[in-house]
Length: 42
Image (tube, rainbow, N blue to C red; front, side):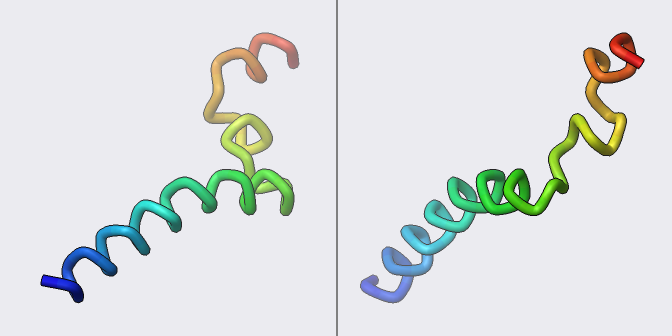
């Protein structure tokens, strides 16, 4: 049980931290052109 709970908590931490880390490296969805707002701005 403890392994499953710790794995679940680790998955939550990765899911919440990944977008912040990717945005810091400039790999956000807006810069890839997948966001409709960025397409309209271009």
